[in-house]
Image (cartoon, rainbow, N blue to C red; front, side, top):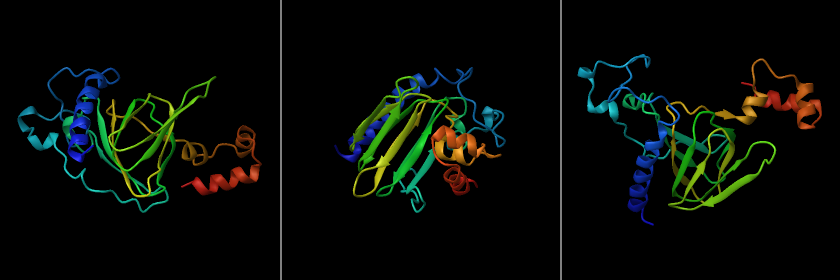
Length: 214
């Protein structure tokens, strides 16, 4: 599938996704509520311009020179004020070879992934008592949906870079990376408790806490 075809298909998916986005966030009571400079109120409609609904640069690759080999560029109410109150967040994700996103979840949004370039594995785990793992290796043009609130993982399985577009049906999807959420909590979670929970010795837990604590 050509890049143009993928982009056209992606735009169609985004439009469909926007239709269900408001199922989670509050329905707007007016045509738009462009966020003001504080992000807490609507701008006077008479001062709104097309630039309030515009963002450029998602065609540019992100800087993946970090321990995860991953980068994101986000279109949200913070970067596109016109998205305020519309229940949608959108981003470009770049993964270097062997790049990944740690196991994480979004407490307020379902996630839709479209691969533009390369290949990636995306998988999610259902809740107790099944803990069933659903995963797919995605190629260019493939789509995968991660239900709201479920732990999921993402990793590049291509020899080169992988690029994906990701949509969330919430203005504020929320993200909790499990390694950081557990081992970098402030104040720290009791290491003896964590050693029992993970069935590891206390010293290993302490070392993990030191590694992740920022």
